[in-house]
Structure formats: C-alpha cells, structure tokens
Image (cartoon, rainbow, N blue to C red; front, side, top):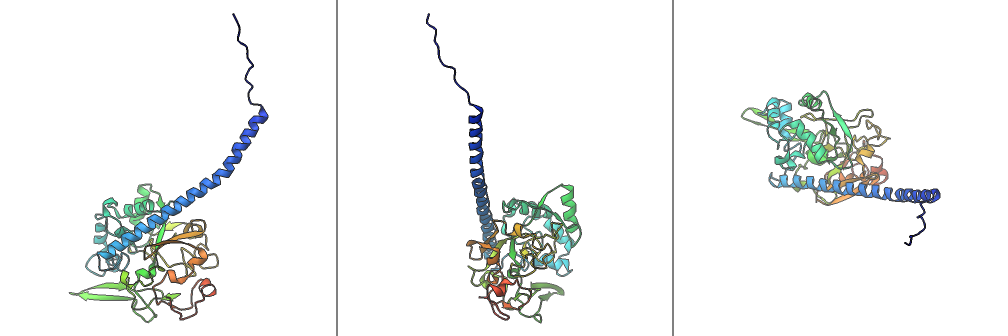
Length: 352
C-alpha cells in the first residue's frame, strides 16, 4: 500500500500576524473618521427634514386660521390671558383642558404642538412637551436638561411629573425667531399690547414686541403669513438650544413661559442671546451653549418662511435680515458687533 506524504501547512509567523494587525488598525483609522462624518451628515439631513416638517405644519395651520400662524399671538393668547386673570378662562380651567386635549399648546410660545397632528400626541400637557422635545428633535441633540422647579403656572406640575416618571427631558432642538410671533413696536412709546372688552370681559388680543433692541419691528407688522415680506430671507425655524446657565442646563415647562420660553429665541443678531450669544456677550453661559445651537460642525440648519432650507455659520447667522420682519429699524443698541462691523448697519437703518 502506498502512503501519501505531503508537507505540513505553515502557520502565520508572529511578524506576519503583527503586520496584519497593523494593516487592520490602519484601515480602521482611515475609515472610522469617514464613517463618523457620514453619520454626522445624515444627522444634519434628518434635522433639516424635521425642521421643514414643522414649518410646513405651521403654514398648514395658518391656511386654516386666517393666515395667523401658531404661537404667542394666536394659540398662545388664551393661556396668556388666563395667566393674568383676563378673559373668560381661568388658568385652572386651561390646565384642565391642556391635560385633556392633545391639540392644546403646552405653553404660550408653543408653536410646535398646533403644527402637528394631535392624534400622535399624549394628552397630558407635560408628557406632550417631553414627547415633542424627544421625538421631534435633531438627532444631533442628545443633551438632556432639568425643568425649572419653580415659576409660573404649570411649572411645579411639570417638575413633579418628570420626577415621578423618572423621565429624561431633552433640550430644545428648534426655535422660531420671536419677533415674527410678536406684533410690531417701532418705539418705546408704541403700545406693548392691545386689549378688547366685550360684555364686561377684558382680554388681550395682540402682544407687541416687549423689546425694541437691537431692531424695532414696524407698528404695522402682525404675526401673519401674508405680513412676512422677503420670505426667502426670513427664518421660520432655526437650530437653537435654551437654556444654558453655565453650570445648569434647564428648561421652562411652565404654561405662561418666561420670555421666549422653550420654543422661540431672540435671534443671533442680539448680542446677549441665550441661544446664540458668544463669549464676549452677557449671555448667561458666556457662549458655552454655542456647540448645542451650532451643532452641525459649527453651523446651524435653518428653514425660511418660503420653505427652503439652508445652513449658516456663526458669522453668517449674525446678519439681522434673517431674524426680524422687513422694515425693522436698527436702534444701534445691544446688537452683536458683526451687525455693524460685518453687515454695515448704522443706527436707524431699516431691514429689507
């Protein structure tokens, strides 16, 4: 019988194994940054799509409500009046309604709830706000926050709900420039609000801009779609985070929200903006919040009122044309330095 013979198969030497490991490590080093970059790009696209969805929902609301888009001077007037003891609805009644009807805004500045279908939203007001902040957030926004523990009506309720449910609350992803929600106020002497009395019941029917610096919107401006001129240059929704107080990152979950609340901002042309102010400003965090607002490699997504999207660098975002209605007047006060140094605005100039 013949016996088969052959050479034994040689295994890897230690040197060969080390070479293979080195090659794999090199490939990982090359590919991982590319994969991370692709993931960040995907997050940015997803965030832009969510912005557009919300902006479209806002315009659909306006189409059914005489051109008034959701926000402080439409859906927010009822809770605002209730918080002041005006109108025919008490704050207690409003809170009851807000916990029984998913279409009711979670706070005075909440323009997002009315822009969405109530069918998918939780009935409980605080749960609804938490749901929106989590499920309609930019994928890049992974920062959690704590609710104020004291403040206006609904604040203690929110704190109790979050505590009882051991719920993580995400920070704001998207903000609307508040000057589009307020009525116009060109001078300090211009009325800050308009009221109406019917059958002995007085209520506020229009809230005008409480601030006229750095830009004072014209008295004629009303928060309606047909009042927004140059809509391709006016921001409807922007990336933005509030509130960063330096050591604490928190959020306003009350009904009569403090100025700007959880859903709006002053815009990036205001020197001391909570969302966009830099280290040289009186911003509460001295610019520590900037990576959360300009979260896409130092840029922000924006959606304009004509529904097209864009990205802006910090420097580009200082252009006041984006944040205020047309014909708003530059007062020369409290503006980011770029308003004059880069974009050339002088006192009393008006925005296109």
